[in-house]
Length: 232
Picture 1 (cartoon, rainbow, N blue to C red):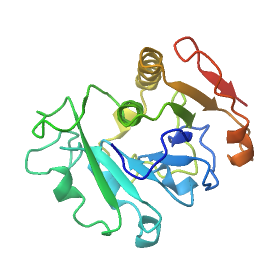
Picture 2: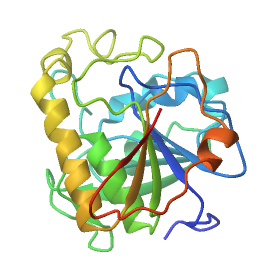
Picture 3: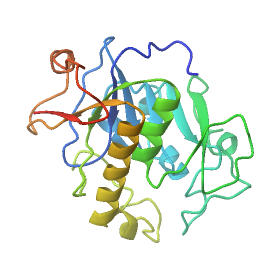
Picture 4: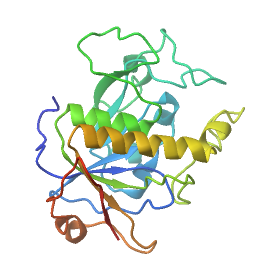
């Protein structure tokens, strides 16, 4: 389990879709950022990814605001031109350059053998799916999701791995497929329903920010096996 965190507090998971918004830091909730969405927050409690090349995108100043990084035991995108993981590049090797204050929390995904049998193993096809399964494993049940758009697209305020991620632009085909976004969202909804995870989806105007007032307005009183609440 993740020590020192109150699992009864809401956990905001911020992805990179067009509905992503800035989030004000607060002691009333935690913030988890998918891939490079930390650009919209001042403090990141959890930075989660499947692809290791995200680890090289932030400045030292930005890294100083990140508390934990969560990634597969053998992450994807460790070598140029391919998404595939490699046995020579485990989570310890790819995070060795990070500041020592960042706590590294590994998990496993189905694309590689579960070498460390003590790690949870997830069957996922996107980092968003990794996030919901990872935080469910760690017993968080009040989840706020922002920037998860089933129609695809990306917020203009979040860096894209399409540009500058690699000289070959290996991310373009994967990220531009609308079907993949819809499949990922449907997988998240199905998993949440089966595991009784309450999800509040935030869809607010582009000039608005997520803050205490908005998160405190969530009542957490619905049947998680039947619906996802949308707050606008």
